[in-house]
Image (cartoon, rainbow, N blue to C red; front, side, top):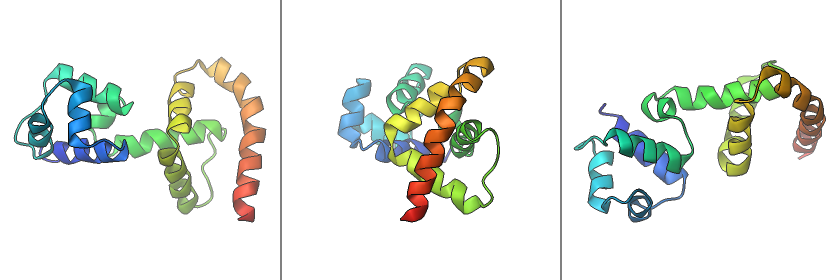
Length: 140
């Protein structure tokens, strides 16, 4: 788990937390956060779960380096009726947008947990909004 510490640091920075702020959120010391990030110490299972809750990610996303990006791509593809964009650069742009908008990220993660029937029903409202968003982005 050598790169696990690096992932904690990446998620911490992405969330805008200092080591001290994250430590306060998790009720641990700043030194503990530093040891995790340097891979000198491994968090307990309870700390893993607290980290996931704090970063609003799943345990798989925290432990598995490639799953984080894949999950966001999967959520986007669900919203886009499972059609992949024509270009991978579009996927990257969309993933960047999702990463910069915590509310959008949260909504997408929640959306993917809904039943397929409810997803399909909601997509009839969501797709026109996404098309409008893409049009606006293309004009820029």
